[in-house]
Image (cartoon, rainbow, N blue to C red; front, side, top):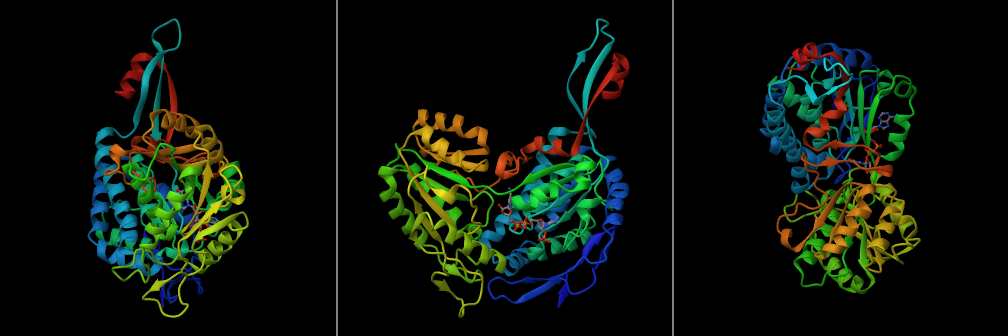
Length: 518
Ligand code: NAP
C-alpha cells in the first residue's frame, strides 16, 4: 500500500505509523495512506523562510512569472495522468477533473504571464504617489509594498486538490513568498503527484514550495509574525484556526475562504422563451451536478417569482434528469459520487434537515439511478431538489450549506428588495447570480446584494452564450466573501498579491526617497 510522502526542507519525508486512508469513492477501495506523525514542521517552515524566501525575493516579478509558467507547463505535461488520479481519488468525471487540473495550470499561467508582465522588472511595488508632509517640500512620504519575509502556509479543502494549490501558490510566489501547502488528506493523491512532477522538473528554487501530505499536527502553532496563513475549508475549522494562540499572539495575517449559501435569483420579467431563462436553467443544473455539487461557489438557493415556480420546477427537473450518474470512468456519466464517507453522511444529514421545512421536488438524498455501479458500493447521492414555503420563510435553507448535489427553490414575490433581504439571510456569500434582462431590477439587485458578496454574476440574454457560470472562479476577479464566507479575498489579478506584501509608509528627505523608489 502506497504511503504519501511530504516534500519538506528540500527532501521527501514519510511520517510514522499507519495514518489515514485515501479512498476511491466509487469503489470504496483504499488507494493509499497518509501520515505526518514525527515530521518536523518547524524545520520545514524555517527552510522555506530562510532558503525559499530569499531566492524568490532576489527575482523580479517577470522572473517569478517565468517560474510559474515553467511550473504550469510541467504539470500540464502530465494532464491525462492527473485527470485519472482525480477520478480515482476524488470521484471526478473527466469534466470535473479538468475543472480542477486545468484550473490550476491556467491560473498559474495567468499570474505567470499577464500579472507578472503588468508588474514588470521590479522586485517590489511603489504604491501610489508621493505626499508632501510638511511646509518644507523636501519632507515627503511614499508608500511601498514589499514581500513579507516569512512563509505562506496554505491549507486547502478536499474538493480542489489541484486548483486549491495552484490558485494560492501562484499569487504567493509572484509576490515573492515561499509556500507550504497542506491539501485535505482525503484527496491529497493529486497534490502529491503534482509535487513529484515539480520536484522532478526542478523548475522552482529550493524551498519555494513544500508539501504536507496528511494531518496538520501542530503546523498552525508554529507560525510567526512575518508568516501568513490562507485557509480554505469549513467555517468551523476556519474559526478554530483564527483563535489559535500563535495566530492571535503573533499577529499572523490570516485569510479564510469558508462556507457559502450562494443564491441564483430569477427576475419576474423572464419568460420560458427568453435566452436568459435557458442560461439560468443551464447554470443552476450545472451547479447541482458538477463535482457532485461539491463546489464552494455552487448555487444552493434558487429564488424564483411565485408565478414562475411551475415553469422552473418542470424545466429544471427535466434538465437534471438528463444527467447520467454513476461510475465517473464511463464516458456517458456526468456526475460521480461525493468524495468521502464523511461527505456522504454529512450530505444525507443535511438533506434530512432541509426536508423539515421544505418539500422534495426531485430526489430525496438517496443514491438515485446509477450507471456502472455494482450493489450499494460508493458514496453516491442523487441530485436532490427541494422547495421551501417562501424565500423569507425557508428555515434552515438560509443556514445550512449542504455540500453536495442539493438545492432548494425559494419562491418570492418578484420584488428586488424582498429578494435581497432573503439572500442576505445567508449571512454573507462568495457569489450570487441574477438572471434578468430588466435593467432596473438588475441595478437594484446589485446594490442590494453587493455588500453581502465577493462577486455577483449577472446572467443576461445578450451574453447567454458566453457565460462560464457563477461557479467558475476566474483569476481576474476576486474570490471570497464577507461573514459566513470567511471575510477573505483571493485572486483578482494584481489585487491578490496584497495579502503577501507588507505595505510600509516611508517618510523623509525627498531626494533620498526618490532615489530609493526609482
Ligand atoms: P475542513 O474539514 O474544514 O478541512 C479543510 C482543511 O483544513 C483540510 O486540509 C484539513 O486537513 C484542514 N484542517 C482540519 N483541521 C485542522 C486543524 N486543526 N488545523 C489545521 N488544518 C486543519 O473542510 P473540507 O471538508 O475539506 O472542505 C469543505 C468545506 O470547504 C465546505 O464547507 C466548503 O464550502 C468549503 N470550501 C470553501 C471554498 C472557498 O473558496 N470559500 C472552497 C472550497 C471549499 P485534513 O483533511 O487533514 O483534516
